[in-house]
Length: 370
Image 1 (cartoon, rainbow, N blue to C red):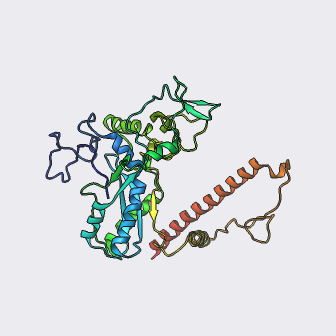
Image 2: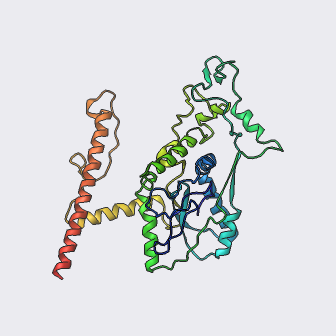
Image 3: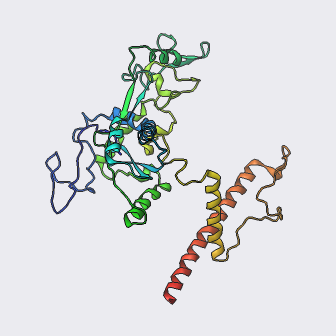
């Protein structure tokens, strides 16, 4: 599932044996370092691209809600989010059960999310001359007149008026869904599973790395647009639009919000990388942790490695002991306890990696002997 278009971009020829020209008149390949970048950066809507990325998580939630209502059942899924070449986020999802393609397309076209925030299309202040904090008023004020900015509650009250419109509407593209049927136990099922599972250990920034100056410029323009967009009700960027963020306090710096959406590596997306419905596996978080622990113990035991679970100070075999720590006791210094915990984690990880390597070598030896 993909987001809408923000302007024409360079496209790669899908089949090298049958070259297809891009709109620019040239033939591009996927590794040319230009595919996905705008034909005309001056008309490409980076602001809407940034806002769509920020609010994509809500749109995805709305889609699953609509799909469950349309099918009349609690649809279960495992999904991952990744950026496309044009830097727009898109969703890959495995959905359990059979759903008509027509219904999926209709639900996709009908799904949208309205952002009922104060309108923020035109900044009033700049990052060089932002509002300042007034100790007496306990609020941010105009740097020239000293007049307090509009409060968050007053700004939100305006969005409740009968003639108010949403600040932004995010939706999927007109052809924003590609549906493929997959049967369990087939090679295609294994390929799809591997594609989804690999994102459990990958970060968004590892999915896209600008290789050419054209790609870097495209990324920089999107980053600049994200820099001044509000990412939440408490984002410092609201000050640029003459509005005090919710719960405003001293020290907010517009353009320097630490929210997840403003990190260049996240490309505006502030949600989780992997999205799993609660009943997808039939297990809760505690059961998943227990299953992971059993897997690690089996891996260690297969090569004769004794897990480092029992310490000399804990002969009973329990993992933790609870006791009061006396303030100022050097034996229980917080920094030393943290360093010991880190060292223990590293020791466990090294044991596990060695066990996996030994298991692979034993398996290879057994195959040669057979």
